[in-house]
Every structure is written in C-alpha cells, then in structure tokens.
Image (cartoon, rainbow, N blue to C red; front, side, top):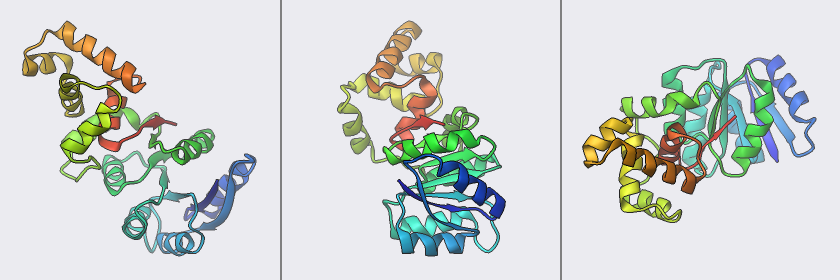
Length: 221
C-alpha cells in the first residue's frame, strides 16, 4: 500500500511516517505540509491513499480533497485531525472522503488505512456514534445514491422491501417506536426486523446501519 502524508506539523508527518513504515504493508511515498502540496503530490504519485490533515495554512485539507476528488473521483482520502468538529465531519463525508480519524489515536491509523484499502469507509470511535444525527440534521448533500440504486445495493444482501423501508427510517434518525408508528408495526416486530437486517449486512448496530446507508461501507478505527 503506497500512501502520502500531508500535515502542516512536520513533526507529526515524520512521526506518522516512522510509525506506519514499521508495517511492511505500508510505504510512504512522500510528505507535504499544506493542501497545495497535497494536490501536487497526488498528481505526481497517484498513491493508494492520501492521509491528510484538515486545518492547514495556504489551503486546508477539505479544499484539497474537493479539488483532488473532482479530478480523480476514485481517490481514497483519509482525513486526520485533532478536531471532532461536526461541520468538518459532514463536509468530509459529503466530499467523498473515505474516513475521518482523530490524531490522538496513532495506533488506529494503520488498521484504518488497511480498511480503506479494502474498500471500507472508516471513522474514529468518537465520531461513529455522531453520524446518523449529523447526516439527518445537515443540509449538506450526502453521499447516498438514488433510491433505486440504494435498493439494488441492499437487495444483493437479501433485504426485502419492508426491511429497506426500515433501513431508510433508521437512517433518518427514527427510533423503534417512531418506526413502528410510521409503518403500523409493533415495536417488537421492528426490533426483530432490525436484528435480521443487521445479521444480513454483518453490521453491529443501528449507527453502523445508518452509516452504511449513506456511505456505502463503514468501519470503526
């Protein structure tokens, strides 16, 4: 796995490079210190993953991610920051970033990179529980396909029409009682449906289910 690290704190970049390269599966191609350098380095190296800070001088990470993804929609960008700011999280997901981690937990970064490489979208443990509420509260466009395409994606796992309705309501932030009222079902029936849905999708809880609905894949670093 070939990666680029971009962080305006050179000590952080060096530390990350040193730590990550102890893993034989990870090679750091280059490091940069701002969004402009991130764009230049990405176009030069076309790494498997760009690991990038958000708050940087000259150009921030979100602006750089937006420009890179507009040219290279397949780019895998994992954002790393000290800020668990709701607006940053929503913007990162809306842009199509493959994850959002807090810098404090260095041990989670290598596993997160491997998860992104395998096609997952990853979030730090502090961030994951926030996602359904942030997504439903935000006016920002979210990375969800059209309803028809969403349905096709879930049908591949044997999800029924009724189960898909429940998934959509979970993604909107409704609790079991509200879902039951909306679909004229008993709460026990909703709980049974949810258990079946989670089992079919190999997900742990309704938070991961909502994340999967919006982002397509989900993992926790």
